[in-house]
Length: 257
Image (cartoon, rainbow, N blue to C red):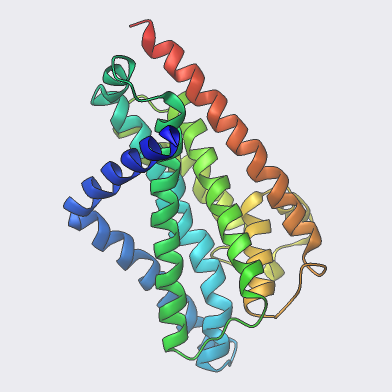
């Protein structure tokens, strides 16, 4: 019960601070909306699809590649780096707040942001006639696994490679943009040459995108996406464990100074 209260308190503090910076909330809303509209209209025109079918295909890639990537991965990196610069971790050592609650609070806060963006993308897609063709529960599980994976990677990058706020954009761009392109977030994976497609199978974003696309737009079930879903399950567990270990290592380093 103590951990739960502390986790909620940390998450609430982060979300309240974000709410006060309304400009960030507006930008985090505009970005996925603009990408979704661009992808949807391009697909409708070039692939000669109806608006509903175009947005059913555009929404999963937009959610995985635009919304969740920059809010959950980029956001968690920025939060960890900012907390270090603001000496929040130093104050943590002399407070009754546990490191576990702090870690879970940051994770929970960015999960809430990711879920909010998922609802935003889904609502806008539905406005253009798109429907969730497959199992909603399976789609929610894929989105949650994607959020867990992104936040875990964000903790690893934020604790091990970024030292200042200025490092965040360069770090996210260097690691993320090539993976987004290779994952099919901006170009359909069906356009990839065979060798590039083989490489893409080691990219978690590719599995996020393909799993959600097949469920959302094509009505596939768990058996049809078993390969992608299994990869995401294993990867999310590894990233959560890696993020926790990286966080603990960062705390030991911070205590020395």
